[in-house]
Image (cartoon, rainbow, N blue to C red):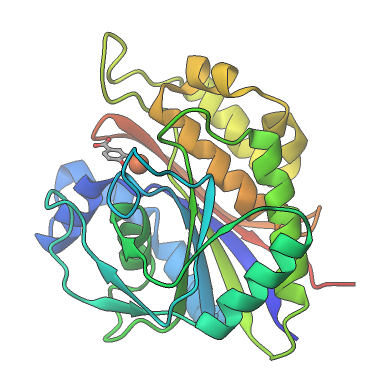
Length: 282
Ligand code: DHB
Ligand code: FE
């Protein structure tokens, strides 16, 4: 059977992609940020997953504002980077696993979540930056990637509670896949950030800390906040944090905290990294 080895939270902003492309990891602005990923890479090398489900939001690339699915699952064997030009200039495609994706879709839709299934899906920085943060040091991607898009761009966006519940459904879906596969789930985006308007650059460290603690040990707290409350506390784009709850909902109630790192600012954002190891299914 497939099993979930754990979950990771990570920022996905395009500036990180540019820094990686330009080899700026050791420059003063970036050094501490990238240092926060060394334990993540070690843990990944240790658990050696076969599949990465990347929960991210499309930023107007594959879905423009005229058609925005609330939840959309990649069901293809290959995905191409087509970021808008201000992110990573990376031509590489990503291998998917359509058979695994269709199993997820069958199971999750069977649990009453109405997903959009995508047999073609272009991916942007929300997907490629996290993939590169985890595995760019290797000659090939060691995992198959499954893009799982959550609308955090066009209101109404799904509630935090709905995202946590989707994670619960995702867990059942993964754990009912008959083949032995090790799966890691990446919850991307966050933390505090507001990219425009009078509050541009707004960051609330206390709220970010509460969010990290909640995702580790009390996801119900974050799930209990309304979209408006999250935006007030974390900024308009800070609502991306709901994607962490999809990841968290797929893990066991008690997880082992392997690594925690927080850094700001990166662009106009605060960047939070968590590695949570899942308890095996009972
Ligand atoms: C930035 C952050 C994002 O989440 C994003 O999708 C694009 C840009 C930024 O802070 O620059
Ligand atoms: Fe974003």
